[in-house]
Image (tube, rainbow, N blue to C red):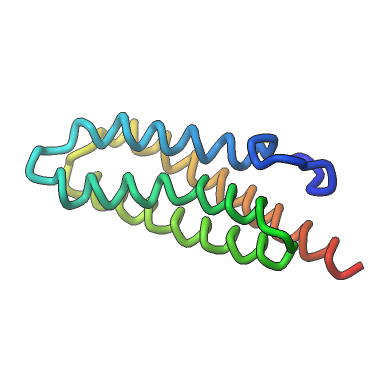
Length: 127
């Protein structure tokens, strides 16, 4: 993961790049959900997936480390929503298990990256 001190733009963050990849995966996968879920689970999971990189971007663009940390927490919350909604999609058999497992792995990696970035920012702000 990049050193937060070197980040000048949110697109430079690997965690943002990985969040974009997850959102793309969610969009592709949810396109195959039943039509009656268009305004239900499809809409929910897509909004949550888009919210992850959006919160990372907004937080990095803010003026303080504290605000960045807060928005990373929002991204973690949205990621938990995606995880829950993807779990439901597999339970309802809207999604192939193998494909879902790939996205669950992306989610786990993103969760670890967000936690690491938050910890580094907290450590840096304590100095």
